[in-house]
Image (cartoon, rainbow, N blue to C red):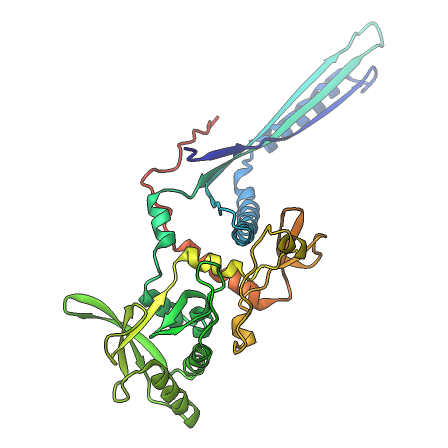
Length: 383
């Protein structure tokens, strides 16, 4: 099994300056003096370290390169899932860069008191070497696979809501059903339209969130940590209507403002809020249904069709991400990848899709990479 891949690169810049002349100066002593002064200045310059000056440049360059490659890897795996291909994730586990700067100076002079044919020569050589060592680690293992397949805990979903992420977007992406109200499923294994009440529910919850009417806390109940969702007192008539709509759709008790979050499709009592959440892999597969594909691939059976968007869906919520497809490389793309001789990309003028790709990357980063084995040891010479 491949556990890591190391990539090394070396960049060398060398320079050579030589000057020579049969009559370079009238006095040989003057030539030796000039060569000595020049050699001393170059030696002093060569003794100055190159390390501190590279920190600012390398940190931002490598950060940008890793960020761009991460976005392209996530987009590529969405496209591969759309074509029923296996996703593969590769992590950059370490970056080690070594620099060296070498200079040397040589001078030679000779003269004859009896003959006017003096000769002098001066040579300068230098070499600058940049040797980056980058280690890649495939994300594999039992723990990583288990985390991909494990549904996200309802408490973690509402923690994202508490952090300010739009609750309607989170429910569309991360939740399969709430108290029996089903979300849309576009994959072939579980293909169905969303319950019309689902979009009414998340729209009302979104307005309550914007007004500060929804919150959560974690407390200990019967020696267990429980996540509690609560409703604040409505501040206006619209908030009261939305709260009444949420209670009626979810079948919650009208005389209670706090509800325990549990995992499941149906609640056992009016004091519970049952959330059937999705796993990371289910989320990625669901998001892959929003990838546009060439019509020829559909006609030839290279890719399966997906369920159309529900008629009652709110466009701002249902179209969580749009991955476009074209034969030519896009000119204004936020991120683009080439797959099966076509370009798949997200428009840079589509903030909704850009934000959703970032959200998927954050969710995926919460998945443990699993194994106890550390990264390979790399020995870098100090001299």
